[in-house]
Structure formats: C-alpha cells, structure tokens
Image 1 (cartoon, rainbow, N blue to C red):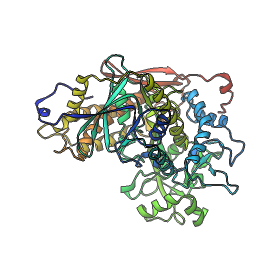
Image 2: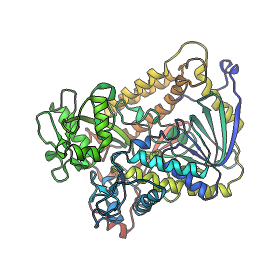
Image 3: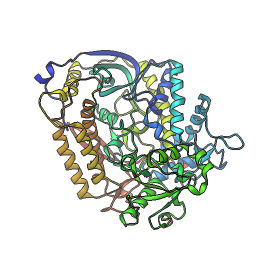
Image 4: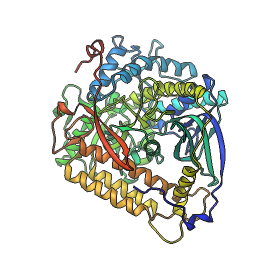
Length: 584
C-alpha cells in the first residue's frame, strides 16, 4: 500500500496552506448515525461540528427503504426485545457481540418513539398504532415504516433536529486523515479538503465520531451510493484502530438487473415483506427448495445464495436474474405500500409492477465488518476515536437482519455522541504533529505531480471488477489469492495516479484519494476471507462449505510494522440468562 514519503519538488509549487477549525466533537458523516450523534453531543453540552463529503440530506441512509426494526409489539403483541435479541444473534451466525445486541434490542424501541416525537410520520394501523411489516428472518412483524421511504423520512427528521439546534455543519468536505495527539496518542484532529474550493482544512477536536458508512463501491454491482468508498475504515486503520469481521459483506438478494445502467439499484426487502414471490425462468417458486418454512422471508444470505444457485444452474432469466412478482397484491395496495418501487421501475425500466414481474439479482448492500468498538461507548481501540453505523462492527456479526441498520444507527449514533461529548469534557486541548500534517499534505497533493500517469477513475473500475469476480457470494482459495494479487498490482499502479489540473470540484483528485482507501478496504476483506476457512453467514467458501465450530471467532485486522496483520479472538459468550433467550 502506498505510503507518504518525502516531500518532492512536484508539490512545492502547490498551495499547501490550510485553515484551522476547532471543535469539541468532530462528527464525520451526515447519515443517520452522524446526525443522531450530533444531536446527542449537542444536548450533552459539547460544541459539535458535522462534516460530510456530500450534501446534507444526501446520505446513504436514504437507501434503507423498508423500515426500522424495533420490538414495539404494535402488530404482533407477543414480540419483545428478548426475541429481537435472539433473532439478531442467530442470524448473525453467533459472531455478534452479545452486549451490543442486548443494548440494541432494548434501546431500539425508545429510539423509534423518539423519532416519532421528533416528527417522523410512520404508517399507522387501523387502531392508530405504528404499523409494522414482516421482514426476512424476523420472528414477528417488526419493521416500522413510512411506505418504502423509511430512510428518507429518518434523514429528514434528524436533519430538522440538527438545524433546529443550530448545530454547525460543513458539507462537501472530504476528510483524508485522522491525527493523534503526539503526547498521549488520543485522536485529536483530521485533515480535510473543501471540495468547493480545493483548499485544505485542519480540524482540531477533543473527540472524533466516525459515521462514514461502508465500502460497497469496491464492488461492481452494488446498491451503495457513489460516496461509499470506505474512507472511514481507511482513516481509522491508518490511525491505528482495529478493524473486525471485514470478510462479512452482505449481498442483498434483490437488486435491479435491467436495463444495464440501473444494475444493482436496490429492490427493497419490503417487496417480499408485502407478499412478493420469487420464481425462476421456468416459473418455479424456488425458495420451496432452499427454505420451505420461511420462503422469500428467509435470511438475506440464504435468499441471495438461493438466487445465485438458480442462475448458475441455468434457470435464470435472459438478463441473468430471477423474477420477483408482487402484482397479485393489486394496484392500490402496491402504490400505497411500495410507492418508491412503483416509481423506480416505471421510470428506470418501463415496468409497471402492479401488472408485471420485476427482474432481480443479488447486489452488494452492506458490510457487517468495520471499526471494532466498545459496546457501551462506541469508542475504538484509539482513545477519543468513536464509530457508529455501518463503519463500525460488532452488532451484525456474520449477517445483518433487514431493518436492523436503521435502529443500529439510532441506538449507537446516540451512544457515540454521548460518549464523545463526555470524553471532550476531560480531554486536553487537541494537538497534532506538524510533521504528520505535512506528510499527509504530500500524499493528498501527490496526484498533481507533473507528467502522465494512471487514471484514477479507471483504477476504481478495475477495483470493482476485481472484487465482483474474485470475492463474490461464493469464494474459494485460488480466486481469493488471484484477487489479492490484483490488489497488489493496482496498489503499485496507484503510485502513479494523476488528477486533472485545478482543485475546484476536481472529482479526479477525489477519485485518486478514494482509490487508496478502497484498496486498503479490499485488502482487509480478502485477507480476512482467506483466513476464515469455513462457510458462515455472508461468507461462503466452496472449498470449505460447512460451518465449523472452531471458527466461532472474530477476525481482527490491525496495522503491524507498517503492514496489514490479523489475529483471531473468540466471540464473547453471553451470560446464562441471555444465552437462555437464544432460539436457534
């Protein structure tokens, strides 16, 4: 992996100056986790600042369409946090941190009611309660929803609360590096680029919350937005934080497949939750073979592998997918419950889902792995550096339940904000090593070196193809090794990347910086996938097809002597009273 070296003459003529921006708590990312962290930090008395690389309101959270999971019991009164806890542990294939799952299942309920108090307009039952729909592998109907636009409503609601409080934010600012205090090693600052002007900004903070989302764009077919390039994971790793479970990448069973320009766009699980049926090209309802009890509402990893198996066996559609049909529910029902899906297929594919079948295939959707954090505070192994949402790990283990992502960002966004505010009250004044800042400026400006070189956009495309071909739904040793070798080759090529001239809204410059982050994430994913010699949850090895009890461990990724290393740690066992709740 490319490392910053001595300052060269090619960067001497570039503007290396930077402005300084102080705050108590720096929150990186303005999705649900970041906004909820900002609200909590502010309410606890900290001077919070939100920084995001896209526009406020454009977070990837809006892609969580089907609902937010919480055991309210409004539709199925027998539901409880205990059952939600069990479902999360079981479908996480026992790799989840039990304490995180306990906190999550208990506190998700209050976070939904909190959203309602903030002004979120949930769909209602006839009795006026919050409506809850079924989702894959949830024992009861548990997903509170706003049609199929739940994530959008959540972002709108939290954004209103941030603006109401007057919490400052800086959008279109891309952070590149987290710095640690030269005296005691706690997180104390970060360097960023103002995308509008191309100028550098040095943020000085007593605590930092990463809420940057995942790295889904390292794959060719993905539901993730353009910004999901793994920046937070890379920054945390370079700052010395531990990563964990990086091999666990969730392939959502249903993404659009045709026309090619929309391939990978999410088809929400709410379609199946509202009665959608999967069939192959022969018209067979194939889930009867793979999970006859839960059918289309089986766990995401099961449904994705089932679709994959049908396609590989030659029973796929002409475009390489399967069919998903909800037309039997009727036009009025579909337009009421699935308005976004109706509009999406009409606009992008010319298909009326109230009368026609959808063509779908698996698409990369979520990473269960990320920054390893403390369950109570969300603090990483680096003091003063916190993480919440998809960039963090521990809750979802080997497979995430649908709808758990929105409650995750609410529960742990709040906890991260509170803990960061508390840390800021006792932290010393932030200080950074100026030599490290100068070295990072060298790295950031290196794509402007004179001469021709690699096109960063083409490298991003190569990265995505490599991961799709070698680190897909089903993996094996030889292919993973080939993928790792290709990452090494691309890392060498990345040394010679060149951005177009000019620093104002220069996407090629941002692409170059993202290539280094993406390659780091790819290396962590592949090395962890090679390490885990079994099939468990979202990680399937054709050369190790069985689940192996000896692999009831988490794989931790760390930097050691400048290189990537791994160690295994046993999954903590829950206390007896919680173990008794888990129903396999």
